[in-house]
Amino acid sequence: VQLQASGGGEVQPGGSLRLSCVFSGFSLDDYAIGWFRQAPGKEREGVACFSSRGGTTYYLDSVKGRFTISRDNAKNTVYLQMNSLEPEDTAVYYCAARPWPSDLYSGNYYLLPYYDYWGQGTQVTVSS
Image (cartoon, rainbow, N blue to C red; front, side, top):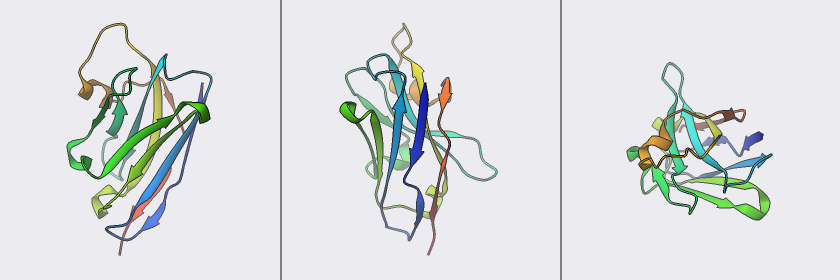
């Protein structure tokens, strides 16, 4: 299992970025994927994830309406479209994967960092 995140950069407040996570070694039918971020001096937090095999999505409250997670099965890629970026969004962003659990869990469970595989991070800086 491998994941590689890319697409970070520096933008002004109100700007947009699209992060990509290219993965290999598994399919989205078998593994859940989520996006996480970690700012300096802060704990890693879940930002967006798929909470079901069917593609149900779930978001951190502070990014709802601004961020969108999507997937392209043919390209083995998951995206994070980030709009209306704020300085508080500055962080290193990671994608992560884990096998779908056998039990059913609510969406917020998949924002917890209980993932087995992590890609390298990509830096997002929002600054004027």
